[in-house]
Length: 158
Image 1 (cartoon, rainbow, N blue to C red):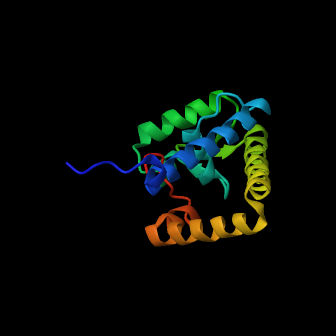
Image 2: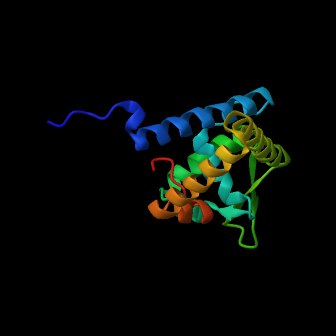
Image 3: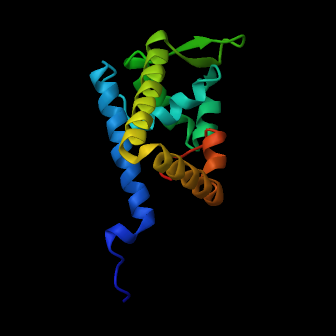
């Protein structure tokens, strides 16, 4: 059996650790801003409502899950006041959209990510930050992750 890499040499685990740490900081900022009970998994659903209302079926397809699973996630967010359902032209179909509170959470998450970018620039210096950013874009593009990011199809389990 081969010897394991030292953690500091395992780029995949280091990227996972960065993701975990930075996502945790965003979550903490959201929590302190009053957007409690939001989980990272909710963000995968919310990202699909940014461009406008969607049906449960559309959300299920975009999230790669069953309609029952999507409906459960929507119900959670609805109970928390982040989304609401409205009847469309076809009374049998309900469309899900962000509420004012949901949009406020989106803006708060964007502000948290902006704060993290500023903190990283201070920590790494402008040149170090720009190098890190360029390398991350290169790795994301090479790995196919950039396509998923641009198309808003990042998966929770990815």
